[in-house]
Image (cartoon, rainbow, N blue to C red; front, side, top):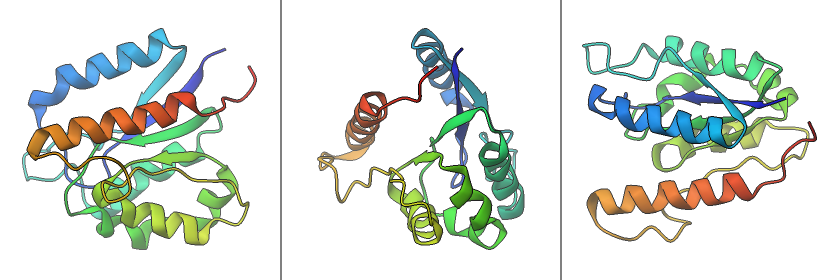
Length: 160
């Protein structure tokens, strides 16, 4: 049985030019035995957003409510993550026990989720202020993504 991995963008949307990168990520996850579940709020919908704050929060909550999803990756960054906070159900998030992976702007969400989380299970984020990602421009993002992926793939997986 493969484990499902949710992929979303709670902050700024992905540009359509990144679709090949996302397809490659999904291919790698499948090769590793994971089944990626893509959020409907990943790409720019033509308005510089991938959805309203409520729509992006709903997409995230759907991933938290799917009992087969073990982890959630947020592949966005930017400055819009705080827009989803009023729409999240932190009791559902806390009860889910799922790990949330993101960095940079997603720290807003991780801090809120960690504060509300009651089970004591460690939630994961890689924040460029805490990880060894001090290089310039796009190289910084690549470094952070590799760092996050290292911790994700070295984390203990649930028994099949």
